[in-house]
Amino acid sequence: MVVAIDGPAASGKGTLARRLADLLHFAHLDTGSLYRAVGLAVIRAGGDPGDAAAATAAARALHPETTPRVLADPALRGDEIAAAASKVAVVPEVRAALLAFQRGFASNPPGGARGAVLDGRDIGTIVCPDADAKLFVTASVEARAERRLKELRDRGVAVIYAAVLEDMKERDARDSQRAVAPLKPAADAFLLDTSSMDADQALDAAMTFICSKTGLSDHCA
Ligand SMILES: Nc1ncnc2c1ncn2[C@@H]1O[C@H](COP(=O)(O)OP(=O)(O)O)[C@@H](O)[C@H]1O
Ligand SMILES: Nc1ccn([C@@H]2O[C@H](COP(=O)(O)OP(=O)(O)O)[C@@H](O)[C@H]2O)c(=O)n1
Image 1: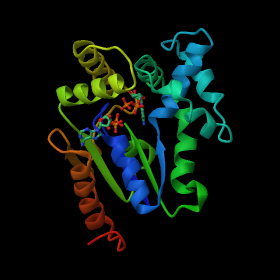
Image 2: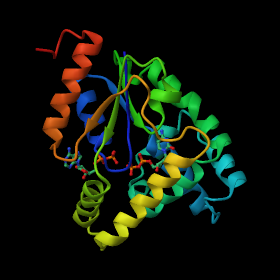
Image 3: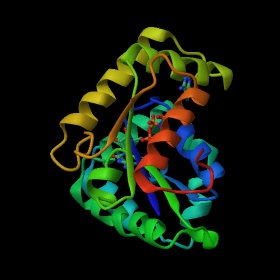
Image 4: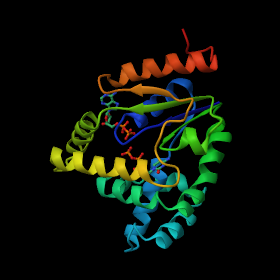
């Protein structure tokens, strides 16, 4: 069984995906980390994430056996890497190079898990169009900027709200307006606005939808 979760930055999709995977004993793939890994590799090689050829070479150099180790690198979590990720993500060859890994994870989840939860921008539309349940998680851009600000400050990064908000708006625009696999809800996705929900309420709402959509019997009331 595959659960697809998409949405903009800091909407809470990663938190929700992790918690759903724990609850259902499914494997979880944060697909944004793949794009972050490509952006980080380009920067570490001294390149420009806006250079399509460099980004494509970095994406093609990611191999399934080494990818889990690459995705665990804490350096991926910085805001500079998030911006680099959204630049490499506009390149069609980069997206094509990352597709097989994502689809393989969904169809054959690691560790013998009976299902997979993938979160990103194009899971319900492109990566897993036949997913059993699709959710599109949103929140106002102000709520998302507040969340990202808190997250960065908790990690000891000195940032101001206005700069985080500006970065978020820029990334929303780049992700929604790109020609290939733009951020948008799949036609059959459940829209979950978490602006005034905490993470527990978001999980409850998501589980109610997944249970009604898939008929999963365990974990459903
Ligand atoms: N429903 C929620 N309400 C408030 N904060 C949340 C909620 N869901 C997640 N968060 C917090 O917001 C931040 C961004 O969440 P995250 O799941 O990383 O978002 P995304 O994966 O969409 O970028 C994290 O610090 C997380 O703990
Ligand atoms: N399936 C995906 C996942 C991420 N991405 C890109 O990768 C960037 C970083 O994604 P992320 O999910 O790690 O970002 P956050 O939502 O955590 O801020 C996004 O801004 C997108 O440009 C994508 O294009 N497709």
